[in-house]
Length: 217
Image 1: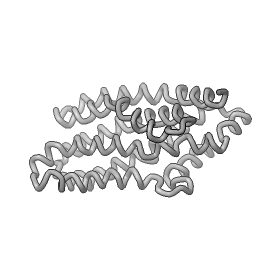
Image 2: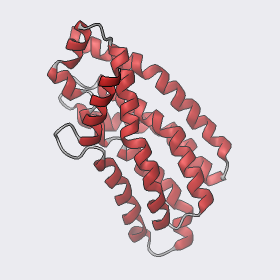
Image 3: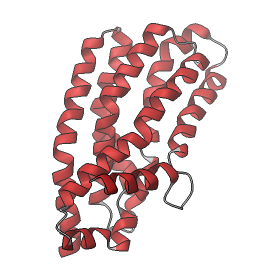
Image 4: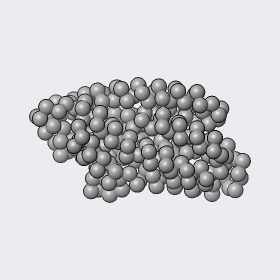
């Protein structure tokens, strides 16, 4: 599992030789934070009221960017077939891939919240709630993304379809995460954490079954 994790982190963080890597979600997230003040104007109260929700939307959309390289390149290379011959099940591979996927974008987005909140005139309490919300919600975003990437790996329009599927499936995480900012209530984040925990638990099995179905089909 350790060699698999190192390989996955190298592929996701550095882009696997295709460029971009973890910088694409990070730059997208910061780009939204930089452009939003220009869109609404220099209205500090409005930025402070709506900025947290905008950052949640940016985090959700940033999670879409790595989907095209989560599963499809390894399916094309026959990696899962080779690992299966060596006794490594698809569920184990997907569990490791899920952890690597979260590490490649979740902590980076939380670090990016510090300059983003300064750009949007958010106070310290809002920043704290935003960080807690992303800590609770980004594992769920990673799980949904990996599940969708495995299900659409064999489709010609898989990349576009993945993004369309992720948004409605991840909507509950967004609702509770942004709702905690609206109500200034950390207890609401428990719902995001519960959804994330459920998604993390079922994703390795669902994604592994999708990989096997694609190979047998």
